[in-house]
Length: 468
Image (tube, rainbow, N blue to C red; front, top):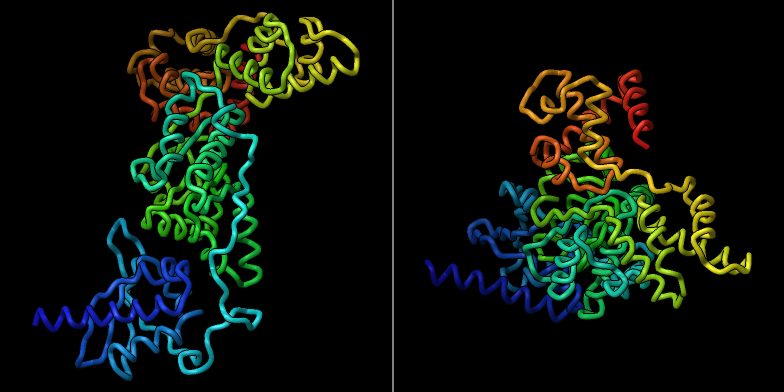
């Protein structure tokens, strides 16, 4: 019996060899290599094959059914029936069995594309859409980004690793997420030029999917993305509430991950705070590594400015650099914008770059120069919040669950997250030694209540203005 079973499996090996001789290497590795033998019932003349994705079944039957029927008939005899066991949820080992479609192309002409030509080579040249200006050479390392930067370099050197797949980078706008993921992609292309690397914003992905639905080309859309070796999607929080887009991305994610293709995602918040996202996607986001990017502190802002000054060959006094780093504490984009504006005004007004010019430029470009104001800390925000709500700070730091205390605690966490560069982990430690999840939940609760309770929202905004 065992000898007979091995003989039957050898027949599938023959099928693969025949298929390999009739398709391109890219087509074979993409569509046929993932297919595995399950069983062959000689009495019924029924062959069952296993596939990791329903889309493989759809695509093979659409484009290669005549070839598949021919090789199966040669290996298993005339009249063989084909069934597929399709993995629909690898995490929970869920599969379904379906019969192969009996199409006229099985006995007619070769599968054709929509324009009537034979199916072309699938994996054509790919524009990675990476920004060449964003590299590791000009991505300044600091305490706020050391972990994600180090992991990003490791991925670029070895994209086949599985420990950091997916890499989920999150942090507020302007902290360098887009720069980092582009740097990973650029370095990876340098070290592994044969890899298909694609950077795409979540918004563009959604637009492409909508167009595919409108043109009845969803299968082509998914096939393209499943052919990518390293997929980078920026601002994945934009998928929230887009159920059909999430479903398409779910199938793409599963296929890439199961085939050890690297996924790199960015978001302005951690998965736990992504409302409107399907739970099965949130679970997958946490399979690899969650890496937080914080807003740069003052010292790191100085280093970023110095790096750009060296790169652009500028001459700017150190006292001006220190003033900009101390005053412009919003985002890396604002830092670069101020520097560019400073150079432009210097040329137009024919003036040397000094502190007076820097003050004028910041006032014009950022809005309001922040002159030597007291540094906002978690402790200071907590103190002012407690004064506003007339709550003892020690109660907020305690484990008290009184409604008034919880409200003050959550608002203090919300304002600290909004007004400082501290990570959620550090905010939690500063306000009662709470954990990261508690801070995220508190910020989420305050945001939701502000939206549903205008009076509460006005009080929080008033308190925020008092601290500015």
